[in-house]
Length: 307
Length: 73
Image (cartoon, rainbow over all chains, first blue to last red):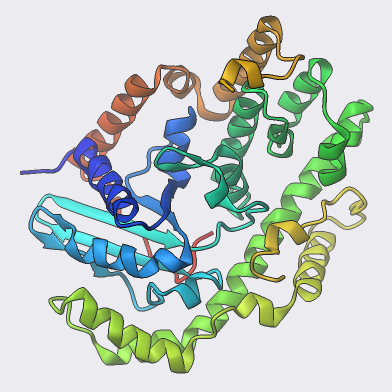
C-alpha cells in the first residue's frame, strides 16, 4: 500500500502536535507553510522550527512516531544530533522514515536562517509566520525567490507592512508602491524601497545587487558550516551506525562525536564583519562597479547566531 | 481585537483588490497560469491539488529524495 501525501501531511502535523502536547514548541515552515499561505510549492518533505529547549521532546516524539511500521532514523553522516546546544548554533538535524510505499523526510531548525525576529513569538496554528518563512526563502537557490515575493504581496494584502521587505520582483514592487503606503521604518530596513518610492530607474540594478548579496550571504553561511562539519561527519561515517539501531543509540553515538568534533556555533566564531565583508566582495566580483549603497544592514538577520 | 479591526486605514477593499490583481499577475509570470490559479484557490482545494500533484509524481517514479547537508539553506 502506498501512502498518499494527505497521509504524510497528517503524519508531519502529528509530530508537531505531539511536541506541543508535551509542552514543547515547534512549527512547520518552508514548503508546507507556503502552501498554507497561498503559494503552492510541490514539497513532500517537512521543515520544522523547534525551540532549542524542546529538542529532547521532539527527539522523543520522533522516536515514538511510526510511519507504516517504520521508525524514525537520523539521515546522512552530516546530520548533527538533535540537541539544544547545536540547534542554537544554527545547525539542522535531518531525519527520515522509510517503509515500503512510504518515505518521510524531516529537517529540524532551531534558528530560522536569516530570521530577524523570534519565530516562536508569532505562530499561525501549526505553522511559522509568513514573515519568517519569507526570510528563510532568501537563499542561494533561484527557485526560492518568487516565493518570497508572493508571500510579501500576501502580507501586504493582509495589511502587514513587513511585506515590503519581501517583494523582490521589480514589476510587482513598482506597481504596489504606486498605491500602498510604504512606512519609513521599512525603507530604513530595506534601502532599495527608497528608490522604488522615487521611481528611480536604478531600482532594477539595486534589486539585482540586493538579491546577489543575499545569495552570497547564504553561500558564505553554508561554507562556514560545511567546513565545520567535516571532522564530525568523518567520525560518524567511521562509526557505521547500523540503520536498525534505535534512535536513542544513533543519537548517543552522534552526541559523543559532536561533543568532541562539532563546534556549536561556527558562524559566531567566524564573526559578522568577516561574513558580511565576504558577501560584499563576492557581489563586487560578480558585478564590477555595482552600487553597494542600497544593501540592507543584515545584523538583525544573524543576531540570534552572532549576538 | 479581530482581524478586520487590526487592518490599517489604507487597506480599503479597492486597495485590497488592487494588491490581489498585482499579485495574481506576478504568480502567472513566476509560476505559470496553472499554479497561479491553484495559489488563489481556497486553502483546502489548494492543498488537495498539490497533494494530487505530488502523488501523481510519485506514481510516475519521480525521484523525490532529499539530500542531507548538515545545514539547510
